[in-house]
Length: 337
Image (cartoon, rainbow, N blue to C red):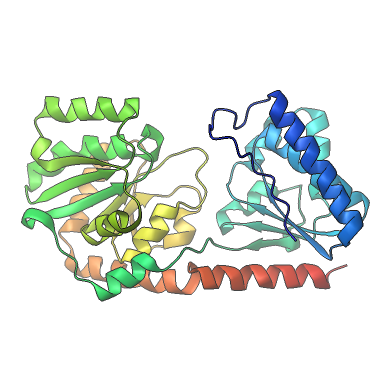
């Protein structure tokens, strides 16, 4: 059985805000949950946990009854911000976090790097790592298709939310240094180009006179998104986004068989290891330029990264592997006291 706690309003302006309808929805969902407990007597409760104060308080409407009535509970953290949330919480909220999480049967995290985020809240032996899994459409298209580069240039792709903390500005500022060394390269930025940061970046491109080497395409979905990966030769994602968890775009780049340039941030080293990426310093366009040129000039390294990323995607990040791993966690929880 499933309890849908989503807010169906068309606007996202209410997300994370304390408004009357949010409170009413939370109380309604909490009461419905308790009714379902009494009606169905589930053997196991699975609950994704929010990493905001208001979101966690809503989650407590489910976790507190589950704890009081001694139900088996599996919680899942989709980010790596919970330690910061706990550190900034007031004493009452900290007590509530300890109460709700202290007896969960299993807590699922995205990568080994996030184990410490639950120190003092969940027993270490009850924490399990389950990486995200995604559909194999990009992998299948890359396996069966032919990779082509536009205009005979090496295409460096950034795909994601075009906000500064995702690293796209750092990558853009690396462009002039790369062009000093080689001109057979183009940079493609895929994402919402209506954001203020994107418009500022486009003005910067014009001022530097590098329009011939930089392209902003706007967002792409479905087949167009797959084509963007197939037309790329390298994926660059020098993120330092504070709430980064396990970036889906990196899984997609892995499935596409792309060499990756990124940062040692969040669970990214867990995902790619040392063989799947070239790592750059955060906020450092010159380091990005130097290491990108190094990557472009080393065909043997690129081939090793391509093979490593494809293999790791198939082993750990397909939908099938995610379902298998989650099922294992649920079975463990059901067998526990």
